[in-house]
Length: 319
Image (tube, rainbow, N blue to C red; front, side, top):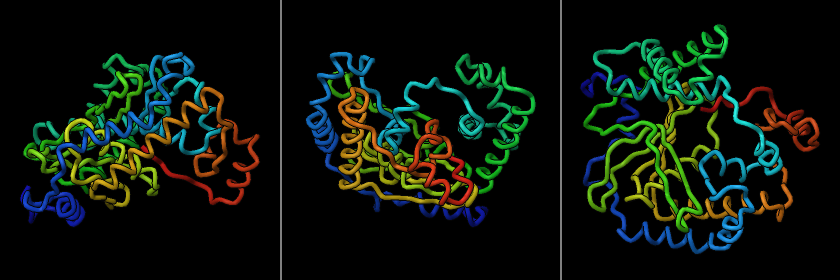
């Protein structure tokens, strides 16, 4: 597809995410070691409780979900921590969408939204993972609704996001990890989409997450975590962005030294809070917000009840 064939929404993405090589930032090659040293030094006090088994696991594993939980409402985090994982339609829709986007990159010819969704569901159903069990046991009505919702979001993606050219080196849901203190602390992330690659010490990668619903500050924090992980792995990306499919809008942020330091401080804070809460050395605090609608202890939480009574109905559909 030539530039003059992009619709306005697609052209906006190309204009914002694209950048000539001459305009890309260069980073100090020692930055990854600087940030690793900062993280390990500030999280050194956590080594003893992890090694002693006080967490109930042999390491501290943190991803964007756990960090958002522990840095949000601590009471909700503690209530949900021991609850078994259960698939829900919003979670399943997101997984199906990401798989369909991955297939669209390598699809021969023009794939229709529902064809890509059907192929994604079939692939996930045969993958032998937890998602397989969910798709094979959910009722026909739920499966049809799931297919319809994923198909609608996939239609929005194909309409609003430019076709992913192989020259852009698109990668979907590629895991990034950082192991600290010999694996006692593991930071993990899985961006929805990455484009480009670094050239020496010149940043070239762009990280994109796809969302539906309203923008939240946590969306930027998720991407900053990914930027930190990429830095610890090789080199910072030059840009991180959240793309809101139902609005055809993009929220992008340039990656800077200060942004990476802020991301590192957030990880340090989250790690300390996690260990303190799990070991009982910190009393869980309450932070009312939109997630009160799905909190298992909300009926017994005065702050959460008061928030919901004063808040308009509805909430973000986040995936």
